[in-house]
Image (tube, rainbow, N blue to C red; front, top):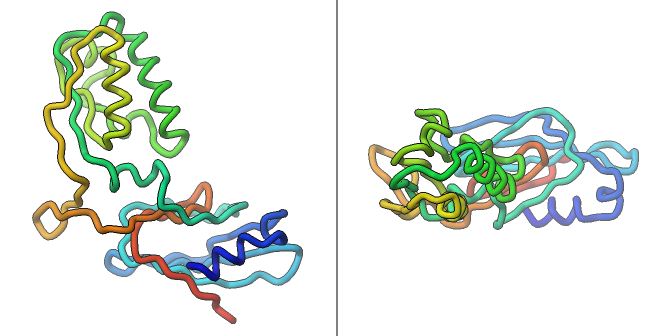
Length: 203
């Protein structure tokens, strides 16, 4: 990935350059992207990016004004954090107020990468859920810790009955997540995975 990252770090790309996904293809657990880099009015450069182990992706055709390769991003939370279950004993003091507080702390963490419903129990209306004892959420520890603090402040006994290391369901069993997970970010597009490589296509 070093050559591609060095290319998009140049002044001519950072000052008005764009990246456009021209093609994507999946093979087993992997994915290949063909990306055109446009900078400074010159002919586009063609790059091919491979990811051997894709865990999540959102790919479209809108141009991206930046290309980043990160090992620390909120999109990695489901694959890097412990997976925690959050439950409550008893209702919150004011369910509507608690929902507003949950939304705010969720937005602070997730920005626009995960909807509020991503890790919450969607089997009931949230106000009804918070008006009783219930399993409220399951997900990455950074989100669950924040939710727990909010619900405790809203008058309920919020606790975490279950926790497991990050894992993926594969071949009929839970397998540890692959090490070295990263995210290729071409906002609003992304790939979360491991085993990334890139090469310039001279076509």
